[in-house]
Length: 420
Image (cartoon, rainbow, N blue to C red):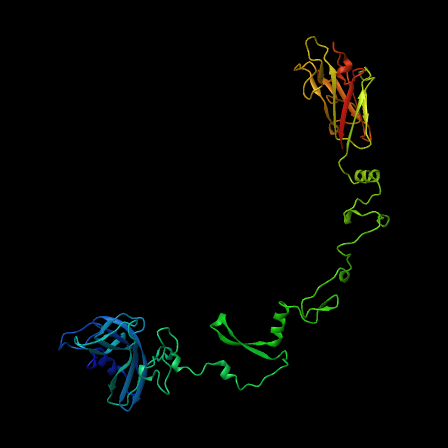
């Protein structure tokens, strides 16, 4: 590799500055690929082509000689020629300087790529002093490599395969059944007893699980054998009969007179003994109510002869319509009072066949009612204080008869519906 190491000018100057007995602080090694021509001076301030820095792995002072070693591995490196080597130290005036240097002059060793072949070796140099040697360095044990010669050897360390794991032939017997063959058996487990497992979340490191924890986990997956259903143990499949759960057989009969009582609502019944009682209960509960019917016109009209309808609930909407014979020559023989138009279909005659009771009060209100509005103040309506009776009248008179505009034509049948 490197035939010799020479002290540089800066190295000699540093040694001259160090008082007798004081330490020379070396710091690190440097390797490079720069080849010098044969016979070139080795007195340099830096490597020609520095490639990598390496830590000082050890320093030994014996008498006037100090041995300074370093270690190299090509892990993670590309192939390169090992042509130069340098030792660095700290100068109190100049900082870190190159104190020793060596070059292979083009004959350096070719180091393979780390992926092709693993290379590890130890290198170093000796410094000789006129007095007692005293060289120091900061040694980082984590960065100190194990020489290849010590790997896979008795008293050395195990070597690793290409997968980064210890070679099988260097491992101890791993057959667990063999390792545990001599263990005593224990049939009754205590809560503090442990079961050995490998933890997949932590690289399969060994862990101990207490039997109390195992029982807790099993209790969430399985039913204990001490549990029963209707006093039948769960040690095997069980069959339940109707009698076991107090149920009737799948095929059975009841006498008709045995079916008595009122089924409550929460059991799927009505809770009532008759249809009338059910209707009353629904009204009491605020259910929607509908009333239908008809009345025959009396032929009267105006404020002194209002029409009225009374219900046994509070109506919200009231609808009224009637069929009639058309009095106009050429008209159809039978027509009905439609929503939105007067019987003569005049635009100024608007038919109010639907009454929203929320729009009227207990005094007559203009513009609301059941009939025809010829003008804004011709139709009037009100409701009773309890809201169950609605009254209306019309003051408009025409050739068709004022009673028709009030939906009270004599002899006509008017049909109504109310929703409440």
